[in-house]
Length: 377
Ligand code: GLY
Image (cartoon, rainbow, N blue to C red; front, side, top):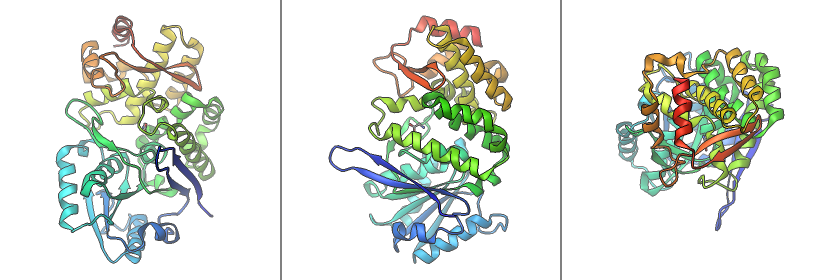
C-alpha cells in the first residue's frame, strides 16, 4: 500500500520551506524509493535509540532499514544513545557532536534520527549546530514522536532548570512514520503518545476528539486503519497550526495545552521513569481544563468528560496520584518561571472554552493559580 503523504509548508518571508511526512505500513523495510532522493549518496550519520541494535535479530525493521541506507550511500556511521529524557542533556549532545565530527562530515552530510522524541530532539539539535546547520531526516518510532515531536522543527535538550530550555528551530527535510514499528512499543509509551493525539482534538477539533472517544479500543488494539487515520489527522492539524507560526509567536503555543503543568510535574520525577512525558501532560491537560472551569471559561461538564476519558485509558489525571514526587505549590511556581511562554514575568497558560477550543491566557492571575494548586495538591 502506498504511504499517505502530508506536506508541511511553512510561510517564510523570503523562502518557503516545505517537506513531506510519509505515513504507512511496513515503510522501514520498503523505503528505498522514498529516501533515495533525500540521501542521494550523501554521507549519513544515523543517530538511533540504542534499544535498536544490528546484533539483535528481534530488531528486524531496524536491520532492514540500515541495509537500505547502506545501498543509498557509501558512507554510513551509526551513533546509538539510550532513549528517554535522561539522555536529553548537554553531555549526550557533546558526545553526538564530537562523534559526528570525527566521521569528517561536511555541509552536504545528512543526519537521520531513528527513535522516539528524545532521539529526534537531540539529533535534530545536533544537526542544527553542526557546521552551522546540516540537513536531517526524522524516523519517529514512538506514537508521541510520530504525531508531535518529529514534526515542526522544535529541537533541543533539557536544562537542569526545566525541560527543553536549550534548543533551536530546525526543520527536517523529511519525516517517515512506519505504523508497524509501534507494535514494539510498551503499552505505557503508546498510551503516553495517545495523550498528544487527544490533545489535537481538545485544542482544535471537536469531531476528531469524538472519533477518538468512540474508537479508542480499536486504536489501543493497533488497528492499522485507525492508527493511520489518527497519525495523519494529528500531523495535518499540527502542520496547519505551524504553517504561519513556525517560531511560536502566536497560535503554535496552543500545542502546549497541558504542558506548563506537565513539564513541571515531569521534572519532579527527575526523568527516571517514575512519570513519563505523556503521563505528565495527561495530568497537565486535566489541570488546564479544571482551571478553565474554575475561572469560568469552560463548562464543568466538558472538563469532567475529558477527565473521564483519560481515566478510562488508565492515564493519570491528578497530582495526588504522584504524592511520592513531593510536589508543592511553591515548587510548581518556581518551575513555571522557566516556561518559554512567559512574557514580562507573567505566566501564560493554554486554557479551554470547550472541547475543541483552546485559547492563550496571558497574564495569569497568580493568586488564582496559587489557590488552584493548593486545592489540587
Ligand atoms: N510540541 C509542541 C510544538 O511542537 O509546538
